[in-house]
Length: 297
Image (cartoon, rainbow, N blue to C red; front, side, top):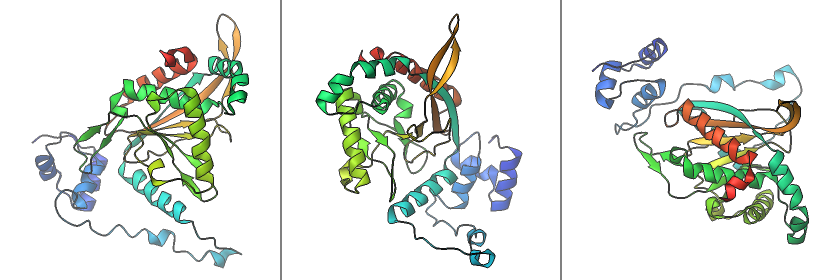
């Protein structure tokens, strides 16, 4: 069977003792990548137990005190779980990040017009509520983003629900509460849930049913700063959206106009999503953010 494998993949296969010709015949794949080699070498899908991981401990097994004073701080259980998940994701997922930005003028004007109502309701209507609402809309319009690969990596599970995870930075580590059925909820309901779930996360009072099962996660650093970053996909999701602080940028509209642009960073699993899909997804996302009336249609 003919197949395509880059020189680096061929070299990697030789290092791991994997016969690419046989692998192509077994999998039926026309293009072989490093993850295919890893899956074969580690015995995935063959009933063979994975072999021992490469001895990477030598990189960390260092007596740092030999170089100067140190103190030790044990990681919390939440931080250890997050570290394991992120390490696995970073090693197993061929991840790419696409960058774009959204014009926030209309959203900010809309929020300003609702300031009195927000005060009467006792609810903070933040820009994040708009991001959740728009993401939910886009997940309905782009079903492959609202999906997960099964454990074999050969079947895509398309979801007929839209749950949006919100990454929350807490003193105990990163937690991701989930807004269920975000596509069926209005801005006020979403805003109230964001506030309540964030409060519970900070107090370590989230219930099991308030976590897990997200279609996609939002990692929002807008309240801290930065202009861009590369969020790591949170498996079994196939994409994650990063948001940083809006920046006033001159935009030519017949004359130079100061426009608040919100940076958007979409990381995605390249096994499921290609670059053109990611560009279309963020383009549609930015269009909806630029005119919040569209998200109400």
